[in-house]
Length: 96
Figure 1 (cartoon, rainbow, N blue to C red):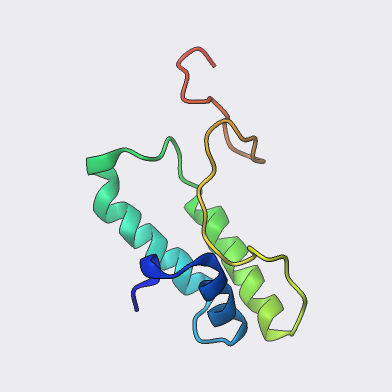
Figure 2 (cartoon, rainbow, N blue to C red):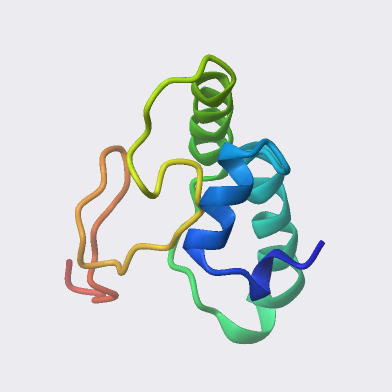
């Protein structure tokens, strides 16, 4: 399935309907990153292990019927001027 052509809303519906898993989305996302990152250089850092861990947690919550925030389970990228726990925030500046 081509996840890149889906909106976050469509992916959320698929997650909640158990048509896909968050783990599948993260694995697909990293496969895509591995295929194109060298050419485009879009990322300063990646948090694959954290993303996989979060995906497993979300999948368990979905299986248990727990309520989730709207973007739970949807892979996303944060601009490097947004603080995120356990990562460096550099704003792409060599001075920071």
